[in-house]
Image (cartoon, each protein chain N blue to C red):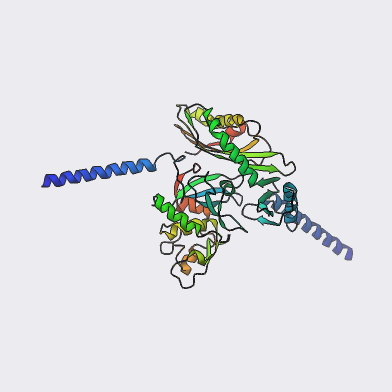
Length: 211
Length: 213
């Protein structure tokens, strides 16, 4: 009986070790080039305010060659929209890379959730000063229809945090989609910026383009 | 007494004017923004390029550029301090053409070099000569499996980039590049802004190569 138990335990340990090796080898694979699909991943480019900051977007298409593959809050006077790759990269900007929420494996199902939620933000005007501006009344959550303005990093943060993947903010008030004044303040002004978002708050996936 | 006062006043006015001019010049050279008449001048330039009047022109403070919208729904950007117009429709078209020739170009390189499956190119137009186009190439993720020395590694990104530009031919005036290269000795990056009229050269590429890992 004991022998059988020990054998089961050994098999279990071997299985766990093998799983760890497989997972590690996948996550430590080349950090420049990985494979599609990329929908649901966050992408960043430089070139904002003398390169002091970056611009964020979410991949809606599988690759950069898909039709209008990027969803982003483009800039002042514009709204959240699906856009071409060239319109996202702008002109004379460094491509920074592809990122994902910490502790998140973007499965096809998860990617579907992210892109579907992101598409609900289409048409919301851009805002420079805060990641998000909304009036959600007495709602528990901030729904897309409550949002009046979004910044580019606000789009990424709202989509990921809606699904409970923490990006930025303090331990108790990190969720941008929770209708609380404290949570609102955590995401106001420049406490979080696109550059801070990808350097400190998300997991780097690769520096190559999504193809 | 009155004369002295007047002189002092005029000196103060001249100093204020000069300071104002210097400030405006600084703002223009760093951001391209021209107070009051900037939008008008930008709209004029972009209308001239598009050959139709712009319906709306605004200054994009985040990206330091003027943006004009046209009746057909298209949009043009102007960076006056770099003397460039950015026509994304043109850029898309050129990028599409580039995407078609890219796989063929890559095949011309030795097998030990792996290029990304696809890449892209951006284009800007000279403000005074609309036929003069400048390109910025992105080669993000070139891998070399060949065993080479560390010294060779530092030269390799510039060498590959130069070969790539030469293979592209004279139809493309490549003045900028972002390249990520890796081999057994580490990762390297080249970044050259394309806001210059000088085509890239091996020396320039090599001077702008830095080891990242």
